[in-house]
Image 1 (cartoon, rainbow over the protein chains, first blue to last red):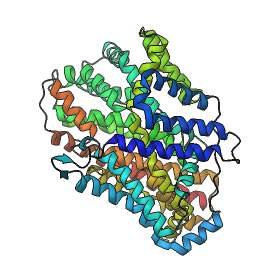
Image 2 (image 1 turned 90 degrees about the vertical axis):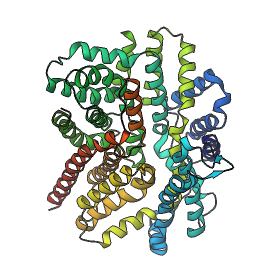
Image 3 (image 1 turned 180 degrees about the vertical axis):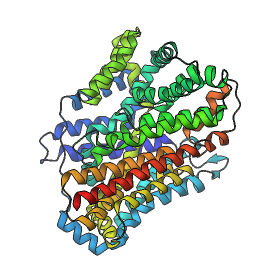
Image 4 (image 1 turned 30 degrees about the horizontal axis):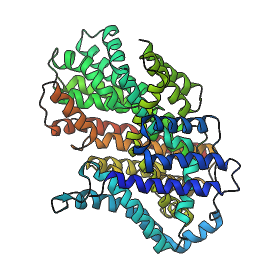
Length: 316
Length: 221
């Protein structure tokens, strides 16, 4: 069975390659910082389960200190110039899209065909992680197709991958760090506390007020926690179940579904949803870290109002 | 009550643009210590959770593929391809991508597109190419606005499509939560009630994309 642990080994090796190439990149003044940073990520993937909790904590602290003290630079692996790229684009034409489309095709193949396969009663892919495993297989397949079809140097995927990884920089680790922060918040009961504050202080005596409080609460709490999944149990237990569903007799499917989607409106507006909102500006080399959030807010706010209206009309 | 100071640390830290990785670690220590844990216990709890969430960082495995295609000229090709269709404007192009992302996500195919594997190498260059084909070379502000709009469109398409699929994490979370509260719910009802919001998201963001396109045209005129 192909499990996530095997994907972790692959990721560990890729990050280890980034670290080694970083260390030898004379064009990057801060090459040591990059080498140690990606090296720590490689260590986490390869040996995270053997480091112990405290060991992992020290590793994370190392990552945060390297990023916080500005020790990360941007590597400059040898790559093609803009003119060469235009010439290559001319030469390869639409063949360039084939490896890029290999990725989604293999993901679909993995999820639809490989996932149900069984050998001797054992599933081929770990069913709980079939999508992630498929994505990893697809990434490898797409690189192989690109190397063969476009005749690129064998080490170029790792060097070019490093170039992009350095473009994203420390932001790459932020989503995982925030997930870990969510766990510490959960341990300390931060969610319940905020939920209690909302129910204590917000008037919920009319149907519209309660609907608005639930939807706005889901969005607001998601903005603070960075994740609608963290907000849902707290807000639903605090407002939706006792007041909207049991009190006003609302349809639980409508209330919960639209409540969750109100949370998603919050996700569009928070820097704490880093993989959606902060990693893309880094990937697209936008100088304003919050540019994607700013592009999303004018959609998120009207949609939140629409959600309140939809829930008010359809739940009762 | 003081455990909420961790949230305050996050809000203030992000607002003054401290390095977010440091902010997160400071917030974890603040909350953990006010919750009665020792600093070493906080560090261990944080490290444990970090290790358990490694799957979040797996997504970067697509970068070598994206990088090698860029090296071979994919962005330039994407730009040239869209420029050949002179009547494709950036607004309708991104509306089309929004529909594609919502529909495929609603079928559970959330991983077939994304910021790293589609927006950076293909969708953003195509969006830029569509504008360039009409207005010539872009100034930096316009280029950034077009890129940010492409990234936003991917997020909105994903968020307001995936909840229509019955086996997505958020639906399973809701079913589990309701079951624990004594309400038995078939996931299909939760999926169906995601459709009205999905349509509203398409209409609102689609209209904004068309207006964005018009504003670009006015600026160029």
